[in-house]
Length: 344
Ligand code: ATP
Ligand code: MG
Ligand code: FE
Image 1 (cartoon, rainbow, N blue to C red):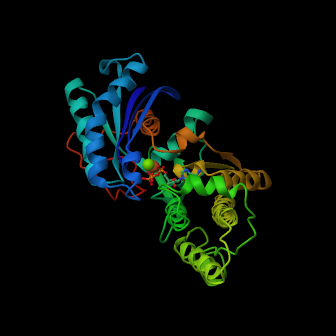
Image 2 (tube, rainbow, N blue to C red):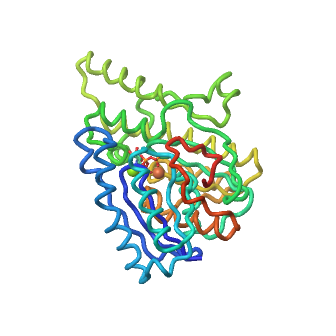
Image 3 (cartoon, rainbow, N blue to C red):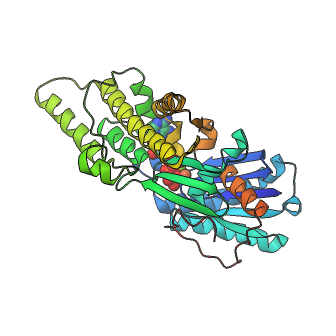
């Protein structure tokens, strides 16, 4: 099937066309530059940007693919989780197109889209796959047998997401928002053993009770305290070393728990997705540990890791091929859509 995918959960207005496992167009407009000076995404600004970008982005996705709306088999759109005002723009626009063209529509889960998108690069998902989804808003370990029908949540963060944790430390270090990529860059030049960064839920009872869960809220506090002590002692802050230590610690926890999940489920494939999977230190840790544990780590190219329309379209293909019913035209947005819900 040929699916038009539409994404508007946060700051990216995106649309793409996918036929089967082939990406035919992929258009992304971001309002991130408008949010940077506020140090975080401002929902009202993001919603307005979606309203302005929706029509040009969707039109370009269709024309880049050399298609008209009439040539599409179905439309898929992110119904959640995300910012309500942003979701409302994409979902309303997608419904209008579906109604006008008489096409079925699927309101899909954005996070599951991050799992689906790897198929464009690596082909169909094998049964019994693990997926590690890490972004600014999510850090979850999932077990996937049939992506169109059933997702098990194996572990999740109990507080901050990994990207959120990087963005908070980046702010302490004076990097512009979003700070994750700046930490990545500086970490390459630093000593990963320079400072001890806490690894939440790995030790003792907490580690036993939460073998697959994550906690990153203690990291920012620990790094902040370490920096304060250096400053109080009149010493310079070794920025590269702080970044390298933080990145190594977070990458290690994520990769170790993901591998443990693969072992537990007897899975030899790990799908990785979400904006934070662009992180160099995480990619290196996953590939290294994957090799050691005999797990095939499917790391998509960076452009497919961050939010885009291709991930939504690819999940739409999976739903159509599995014969899942389209969503009713009056389906609601769900800003807190649970990971176990794949479509509306
Ligand atoms: P969600 O997908 O959960 O709704 P989101 O839109 O914030 O959230 P993405 O756009 O997929 O997610 O990812 C953005 C996050 O990834 C930010 O926190 C950003 O700092 C982080 N990030 C992006 N690139 C890197 C990198 N190279 N190293 C570390 N963090 C990164
Ligand atoms: Mg984003
Ligand atoms: Fe995302």
